[in-house]
Length: 399
Image (cartoon, rainbow, N blue to C red; front, side):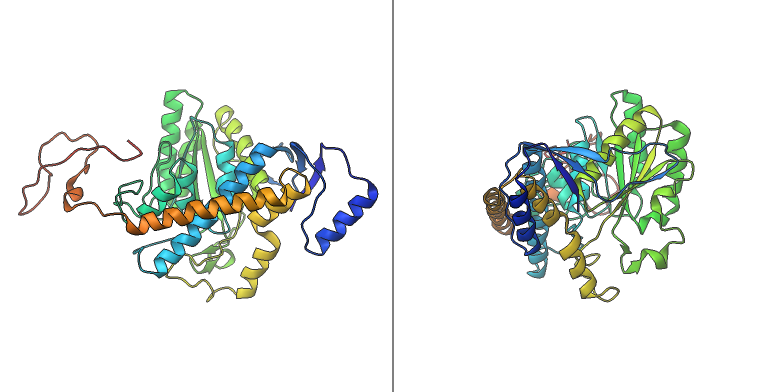
């Protein structure tokens, strides 16, 4: 949680005591009203090869509070819907949920500018939404329908949007690709950066260290983000990594540890990182977070950890609940406003789910449509026994 310093007028002592008692009894009440508050980050940043780190005292406006809460709640609802659709066998194949990790994505996106880029692995339904695809586009892609953001061709692991390079199914392979995007940013000279996200399991991949090295040599605007959710598939960090301080693994590349369950701490760290990489060179962020579901839908997630452990994190560290309580305590959002947001989000995702169920699949000709981004030949190359003419529609949202 966060310690807070409100800019609104303080309540009388008696009212404060009543509010404290209400909070202790589980009743969320506040007589405050504020349009802005100053928040003190509770869990300190840890630094590697840095003399100064991110700001620990951050500002939160009512507008941003509304935005961040809505975004995190929407991601949670999308993932809940995705899990249910998978159990109904409407979503097939791989499906990796982001529930519990919402503060990582929302915090990073809050700091990103128009020229910044992001690339990640396969737990990206939430990122796809944050980068501009509506929930119906995400869920329709998951169900393989033509209303999906990649027309149903990509599915769970291959979603894209402008400045969002996916969605990559090969463990760790997105990191060198993201390094290349950072190199492109340097060539463009537009001040843009690339955030390359990977998990604690992928952190042991050799290509990650090669990317650190290249980015350091060329002083690229590359932010390497290890989303440490404590389990690489079914292997705990302690069992799989000799060095679990992932923010130190860049050697000469500086690093920062940040509480990945705190959306404002993640925002502050990302703002610092964006400024740093444009002036100095690459940096490694480790966002310490937690996933509630298994590694994928085929993993119950309870064979290598206890149900009690999961429940304890939900009760004590849930990023959405913690942020909601903070906003109410500071008077930035009322209980009624929270309820209104919840209702609106639930309605939008429920409607998107129905559309994703009933939408049509692409016709068979979709298999040879937009195989190439810029087709230089009439026919599809490399086919045996087929003579197929390539169709170009260029309808993907990343075109």
